[in-house]
Amino acid sequence: MAPDARTIDPETTAFLELGNAEIGPWTAARAAERGLSLPPAALPGVIDNVALLRSQTTLFVAALSEAPLDEAASEAPEIFEP
Image 1 (cartoon, rainbow, N blue to C red):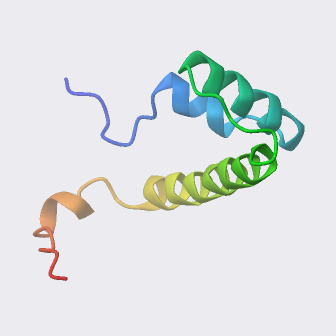
Image 2 (cartoon, helix red, strand yellow):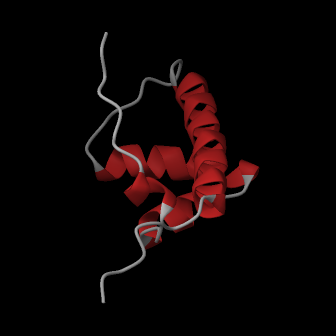
């Protein structure tokens, strides 16, 4: 049986479970893991953006989990037109 399309991977789950005080250290560690050097002057802005991303992802996941399972399957996808 295929996994529920709304199943969240462990890495995303861990990200969503970060507390506000954990975002800063997590962001710096994540950048270092990827070989990125964040300038000290830019780090507060990057941390704010990551915190915002976490909030937006939390809202998206909550909305997705409230949608009926067959809702997406019954609707044709919208075609993007700029």
